[in-house]
Image (cartoon, rainbow, N blue to C red):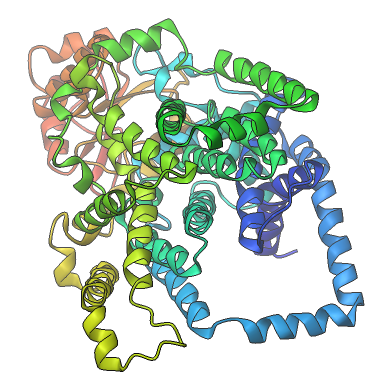
Length: 628
């Protein structure tokens, strides 16, 4: 069987069928086809983590157990799809109805939908196949799971690195998918990030459609989100935990909107909410804060809708049993994550992130100037709305602003800018609502007796708004294609766009392969993250556990007990002949040092590194430490 056909089957088996099976078991009634795809994706991401968690703690993770587990998990969904397809093909009336439905499709909306998908694809395509630092770490741990069949012991990296950085959700996704896909994990990790990003894209569109009940508004949201920078950035950087965690978060928020009228959506709400815990630390923080802000706003302005929603979520004996099960699962996940611990709390307290909290007037512009302005305009245009849907949007944005600035009031939240990056989703929705309100007011009813001149005169303000909105969206999309615009930092919802420079990836790969066969398993290896953007891929190909990185930014923001490591690495790479280097080598038991370009001559002239590299590839070299 061709390898790509196997990969396609693995994609369906891992990322669609488990979620669809859960939908069938919970008897979820979907409003449209897009909603069924969205829940199939988000619930499948939750299922992959749960299956991996169970296998990793019991019989082990290998090709046989993973294949059997996903066949069982996807059986109900596959049978349901097969049955519906059989009935559909066997009934000519359905075929005639399909032709009738196709004729009823608005060709303009269909063209806009295809264009929005093309814009997102054009925006994301240059991120495919990159090998950034974050994804290198995830691939290393995924390969560790494949090799051992168990959940990783992240604390094994301490005291040289922070275990709190790692969550096993994304690593289980990579490990189980590539056990079945038949492709080399090192080169095709982008498949998982693209699938997760499609899920988020669908969620943004569906939330907009649910709030406005307008296909036009949903398409505007698709254009705004598809052309924004951050979705591309997450794919390009290989931030699979961010992507999977936020897909689950958006699915949870969407279920909140659905559950008031359809109580069965309480089940996906609970499963996706709990599955965030092993998926991503920041999403685990964001969700409860969004819920608290939403409840607070709703209690003041939409109290009856709030009580109806809470009753729909928790009412009934079956729902009570389900939520008790979810609480137990949440405790099980929390007990096995690295960031729910006393050491993680101490690291948060001693981090030095406060100086990187941006001025509050800059906050809305971080996702991009265009998106920020449209998002704020959407808030202003809907601030008087009292429906629960708008309370959730206000709670969503308020939570992200609050978390960004929480360091200013003494709450130790790291990496504040990452919360502002996540304004992309609510701002795309709010911007779409604003655009819909502007465009909707300029539509002339067919029965209107007014002349064209009279119609224009009475609607000159909405028409100017429509023109402005059209120009904004055109510029937003044009910014993806016009190189001149790409060089304007922060403009058009895009910072300076670039094709990532991976000058040392092949060198890192060859050095890693050399280390895999020539170094002890306990080796401690250093590399320069400030020079090499693919620095972690040496670890991927060597499968050695202990690495130290020179990263000057980390020497500022790292927790107190890790700052000295980064300062020592700065000394090592800036001046290998420094008198403090022998002590640094002994303190961290450094075995090898990876150097690039100009650094090679510095290490070759230093007494502690043997004067010649143990291995060299292209513009990179590997030096073994010696007694000095």
